[in-house]
Image 1 (cartoon, helix red, strand yellow):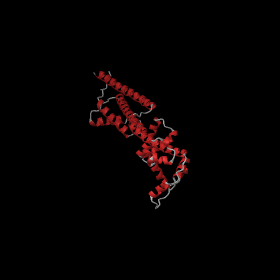
Image 2 (cartoon, rainbow, N blue to C red; image 1 turned 90 degrees about the horizontal axis):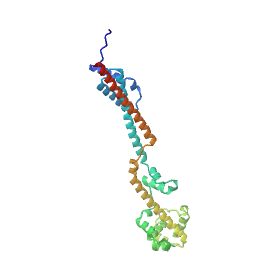
Image 3 (cartoon, helix red, strand yellow; image 1 turned 120 degrees about the horizontal axis):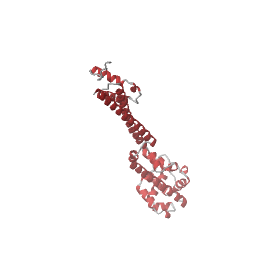
Length: 294
C-alpha cells in the first residue's frame, strides 16, 4: 500500500514565511495594471496581511486570497473615483453660468449678463449716478408726467439736474446739445474734454444758463434712459445677491450624471460579488481541508 504524503502545514520559519509572502505578491493577478502606486501598495499590503492571517498551504487558497485582495482594492478604487466624481461636479457647478441657466437667462439678456459678470470679476463700473441712493429714489418716485422741459427737471428733479450739469461741464457743452445727442444715441453725445484751467463753478453756471430749448420728447427719452440704467443696476445687484445666496446650495446639490452613477454601481456590484465568492470559496477550501485532516 503506497505511503500517503504528509499534509503541508505551510512555511514554519520566518524565512519560509517571507518567501511565501513574496511568492503570493508576485503571482499572476499582481501583473494587472493598477491606476497608481497607492493602489499597487494597497493591493500588496492586503495580500501580505491576508497571507499572514490565512497561511495558505495550497495554490487554490493562494489564488482565492489574491482574488480577495484584488476585489478589495478595486472596491477602494470605486470609492475614490466616486468621491472624485462628486468633488469634480461640485467644482464645475461653482459657475455663474449654471446659475444664469437656472434663472432662464439667454443671449437676449446680454445687457444684464455682461455687467453681472463684470460685477463678479470686480471690474463693473456703472455711471456714478446709478449708485446714488438719493438719485435713485428721486428718479423712481417722481411724477414724470409733469416733466416736459429742462426747467421742469430743475424744479422737480434737483439731483438729476445736478448730474445733467456735471455731464455738460465735463463736455463743455450746452444742455440742449447734450440732451439732443443723448436722444440720437451714444455716438452723438458730445465727447468729454480735457481738463482746463476753467473753474467748474463758472462752467456749471454757463451750462445752466445755456440754451434750454429742448423738446418734450427729448426730455422723456433722456429720463427713460436714466430710469433704464438705474433699474438695470438694481437688477444686477439683486442678481448677485441671489447668486451668492444660492451658490453654496448649487455646489452642495451637484451630482454626477445618471450614466456615471450607473457605471459606478455596476462596477461596485460586480466587485462585491467577486469578493463574496472568493471569500466563500476560501472558507470552503479551508473547511474541506480541515475535514480531511480530522
